[in-house]
Image 1 (cartoon, rainbow, N blue to C red):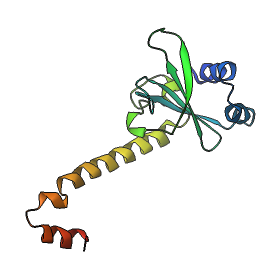
Image 2 (cartoon, one colour):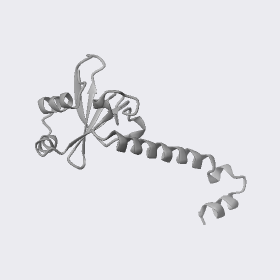
Image 3 (tube, one colour):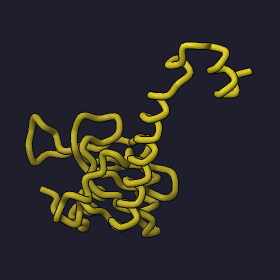
Image 4 (cartoon, rainbow, N blue to C red):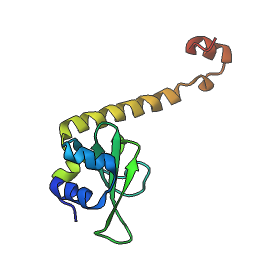
Length: 138
């Protein structure tokens, strides 16, 4: 099982042959972004690690074989699914939980704003001309 950052890094070293990750580990450029449920492009929970500046490696637990993990390259964090704010384990909180909480809060604010905008789209208006004028579609 993985319970600490050190165990997560040790698992990465032992199991991930990705050259970008290995180089980032040697340069100490690996950032644990914490736990996500679910991980980006996955249905499983796990951890997301940034290797260098643009490569994301996800480590997920295999639901069919508990205690076994697998890895894949991920597109980047989906902050709305970050669970570091509800976990007491440091490995799930990540390397900088205060900053990650700000990212999650900002992402939630943007999602709420988008949902609010959908409630007030031009298609909700009865007069299409009014919608064009108000929304700058002309």
